[in-house]
Length: 365
Image 1 (cartoon, rainbow, N blue to C red):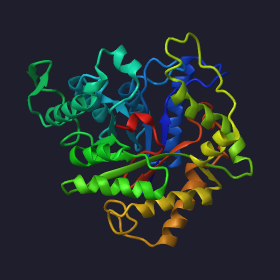
Image 2: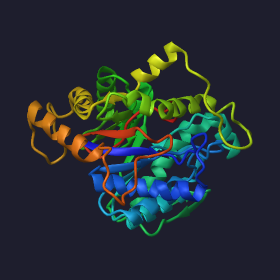
Image 3: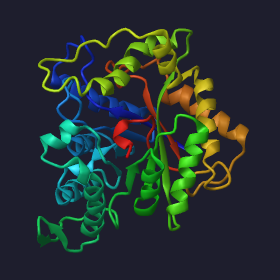
Image 4: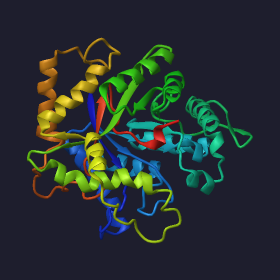
């Protein structure tokens, strides 16, 4: 199992006075800091036309992160492929793979917001067909084969640094989407909020997979904190991130920045708190471990090319990594501080390889 950091979205939290230039500079600093702390990956996410400035251009951001880092893998979680020209994505992803020296993971999603499809002139009813076509184009382009570019056959150059190109994962929630990922992708990003749901998704994907390596990522909100006030610290950020997905339709053509979310009822707050892995580093590590236990791909706890190890060894390893490097809030001088925007408190837990964490509607189909 590996840990990642994300999702980096560059959203402007209500009241944040930073300029867009400062937000993007801080996003790059966060990626560098995640690498210094020992995270295995960093992840970015895409949406368009949102009043809080949600990051719309993933591969340029991935290229910038690649230029500032040396080791950490860089993932898109998710690039909404039906909105894009797949030939251009093949070119841009190849460039990022070369800049990063083979550290890109291309996570793809269907998308769900009508405003985005209308804004790009793409019928939302064609999104599954466009995703499947894009998979064919990406695979062929990176293999050096002629691919269709608006009716004309082209050969994409240069090719990625890795044979066959970056691994392609698919965001998936519904059983049909998970099974599709198992058939045509190299991995999928799960969205089960409970270990049992996650285990079911893994089984669906493996039922369809034709053998060979298959990666699984799990995206979930995670906040480890050495203190009794963890919920009070993360509550406004988690509330904003969760509410903003509900607000996006109402925000259509809204001028200016995003307003504050409305007050929560007691029931809404309880449900929100249930969505996050929250507590001391040891409590967070133990909770993450329950998802690893639900992943039965290898009949035990392991990562590719690593030996099996027993539960207590794994628990001690994770406690050391989370408390000592990944989620500590005591920072050395002259290093970037903790995230100040909505991405605060989002982290990545990974099963069997580098990958992401929490449910996002853009994964679903």
